[in-house]
Length: 128
Image 1: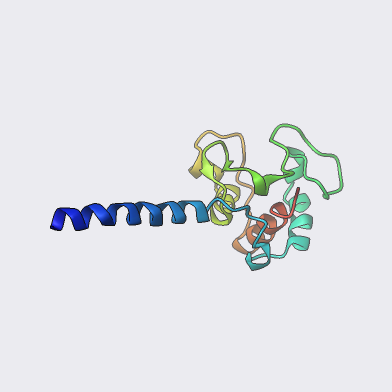
Image 2: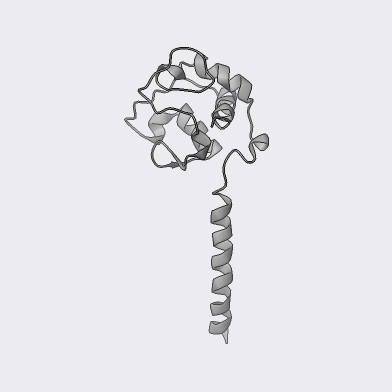
């Protein structure tokens, strides 16, 4: 009898696990009103920190580089830096300490503060 009860519970547990996994697959921009940070400030900070020296960033004026990937549509990408899950916290971690995330990466640590990184990530997640 215990075996049957455990057998019936397995599909329910699998379904629950699937729901949890799928809940993380929604677009990051759907709930962007709940994200920390001020996108309008983040747009300015991307220029101040020199991000446009290597990246093309829509909405940020000035000459833009092509060493790093273009940052338009970032919210729709599944991964950051090739393998890091695209979440607000992981993107913030990548921006603040890229060498810890991917040792040897060309992306430099430019000293982005905790407050500024929230603003930068908030702006990046508004880009289409």
